Length: 316
Image (tube, rainbow, N blue to C red; front, side, top):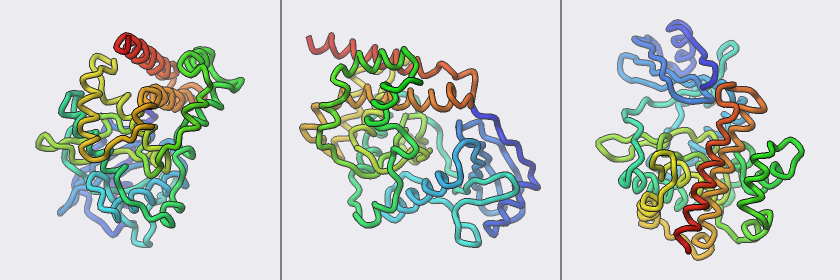
């Protein structure tokens, strides 16, 4: 976890005044997030989630809020809508701190299970099923500005700074250097970019909230699906086919995969793992955001190899 920013009740009170809110009754730090320090703030008539950015810059944070506002306009049922400051902006600035304010929602992170996979799959399909306004969509950021798509993964694997084990894994999985995948006509729209099951909250056994749109942007739906499958359909840290099937049953109940997406699904799952692995390299190895996680990217490479070998066995 990133270095946690500690604030006092007085500082929280000052920040909330920027939103026209006063009288903090209780300030509770939450041990959630890598890129943020999160606090529950209880007021007389509401509870809010105060986030202080520890990693993203102000432009990235503002772009994320623009996506969340767009999703709210499109009535996506699972995302949080940020509160506006009194000046109409969405990102607050207070001394050396900046961040955002959301409603506080009740819920608990689920464990991996068939039911969890179905619910997460359906939530992602509803995101991918949004009918977009082309003009408005062009105002939103590309996923590649905050995450790593296939072109970025390929470029990094071929770069001089790429760790040898990452490059070797990429060459093993994609001996054609992703030519077939990159040539496929894949549908694009808003993607979450990091929808693991632990980025959701469940209430009364139903998914209520999708969290952490920090890597959201315009990208390929199939990559988004691969990322989500790779971090949700897990048993003892390994992707297993029964949970993948449960996930896809929830997803396809809302949005059917086309034949090209089905053809490249396994590649997308492995790319999803390589994408998040590269995200970890950039933050924990190159930027030293958390030295204890410097080599955590390797866990995802191992997971990708396990999945690849499992599919080889199933298909023979």
